[in-house]
Image (cartoon, rainbow, N blue to C red; front, side, top):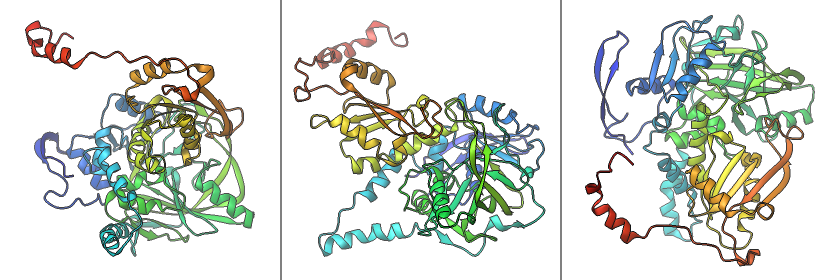
Length: 517
């Protein structure tokens, strides 16, 4: 869907006001993806969604404090042009509100993107020649999204195998008790040593010195699985790793998409952006990276080397504790001539990651519904920090249905970490926390309706009895049936009848109450 034109007053670099008419990026023709991060930044600036900061600001703590205040006030993305100690501009809060998420995905709503995904999932096996012919356009479109390998790209404008230092970049220390500076939005690229299939993940990277960082591969992450499989074959070897920092906004989201391990994140990014992601070969390792990236770090992880990493102020709102993790050795840096360092912060919710997580929740709902069509909607409140609380509305069809859904969620990829699952009836608006609290608490008998299970939990769950292992709770907050052992009559919800509501609406203006209630 094309965006509607709107006129805004903006301030140019010269400080002069100018009227800018905001048209859809490709008015009058099919949407074309943002080529790179810079094109998206221009779009944000024209839309009044980006603020340039010319004052010198320290990446150690000060950027975090400024960004947190701006994010919680619903403010713009921030481009720090003079971060202290670096000549490289720092970009943060890129997707820190719903409007910027829509601009990034070039959609009017997240439901629109979810609809595209639903359309591709809703493909039945062709039964005859006519069905096969009808499928051809979808298959052709899907094929056009596969990553496109190119000979070179802007990320190769400067290539340095020697004489580089990570300290040149304005890498954040986010919180006072962090163990140091952390790269917080890297696209970490590895290959499965057995199948050769690529994985892209976002893992924090503590900077140890000029050329080494930690690689925070949590136990259940795909990068960690590649590391383990490589160690099984040769504990004294290495695993190649490439890290891309800063790309078009959808590609930047690729590393957090909850897609199956055998599906290429770059292909799915191409699907979301409607154009393939251009990839280019690394200089020193057999991996490919986004050709339009701002900065690329090439190197390896030694399979026999672990080092203490952390603590780090995490998205839980608490410091995740120190632990031993692999070490990433940088062998080559490639970059644009004047790169932009893209970063983010996590901490007490809500932060920018909430908006990204909410977008993932909405656009991937069809994937969950494809497997469990009885799911009507889901919600993960910001205060639940993604893995602590999921509220699920289901169309209940048989006794124990709510408990089946609890266990289904605990079997779904990253959803397995969900600490508390609350299942409500299909007519509960799970996006309205007041309604959920009211109806859920009125529907449960705690002893009867609460279920506990043991299983894998998020590595960052500091309350778990052991790292990566603990308990989870499911709450069946649906109306109970006699077939579920409930022998009493379930009461009706109080609602006013429509006749009375229409009658009052007809003479409402005469009451003089508008604006007062």
